[in-house]
Image (cartoon, rainbow, N blue to C red; front, side):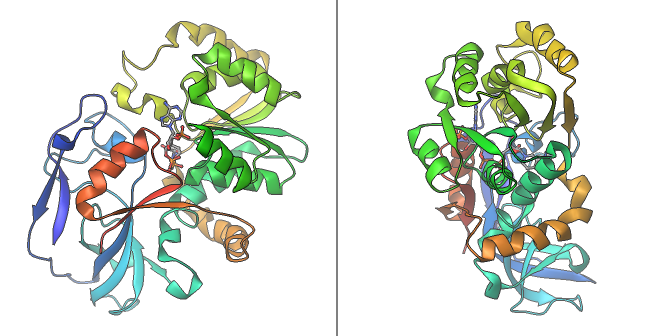
Length: 342
Ligand code: NDP
């Protein structure tokens, strides 16, 4: 089997030398375990955090350890009654061609229900994140205005489409004119602003104010940085901010001293939360998988009918995973970033 390990901890943005491709014999499944030949693996922003040796909600990947990640593939050996060779399963197999997990923690995937890659994006952890954060902490109501950045990714595109389905005005923020076009034409956003066109939070704010004439009721936080700076002063009284991610700061080293240019703004921005009585709610989706069945009940049929759209960006070959990962952190991915491993 082949796997990609963490060769060293990155300083700032990851580079190729932070990863290493290794080969070893395929492992044998133990009692209750299942061996899977991975077909597709997911690349997600949280993996950047796992590369740092910093206190967080999850333990870091150890040096020389396999990079962590979700993947989907075919069962080739099983010591668990629920799985037999030929079944497809999703699990945390890491950046590798093969993976072993206890059968109890695997999710069976039926290829008859659509492309198996959907289990990594629209009908997997990221889609669930968008749905859960918006419905649980965003509480969208008809006629309200919702803003979400990383609008064409699997989280943002879910947020936008569910908010539209609930009768909201949805304004996306994305990197570049092509992604903005995709947000409006493919995902049905009312408008989308290209964050690269604005130099700072003040410019971002002016553009958002025009796109959101009735103010902002829900800001689904994916990126922080100048988008957050732009949004906060436009929040309506009683507005909600599900805090899902802050990707513009992920390369800043555990959000430490180099966390970004808007530190001087902090008192002003923090005050907005008080005067506008905002509900700011951070969440980590792994705490909420008890709601996954509810998500599948609502969103599964929307995907099957084509009402809810999804776009995937598929890189070829495990050896290209680091490059695709670096690209995703820079916004080069068009839709959910996946790697075809087989
Ligand atoms: P995406 O596929 O959308 O990929 C990340 C995107 O972030 C890039 O394509 C880019 O889009 C955008 N981005 C990168 N840098 C910046 C920047 N400096 N300013 C603005 N945008 C930037 O990712 P996901 O949909 O998988 O994840 C979206 C967010 O949700 C992330 O912050 C992630 O960490 C978070 N998340 C949180 C979870 C939780 O449990 N709380 C679970 C899953 C995801 P563009 O080019 O359009 O700017």
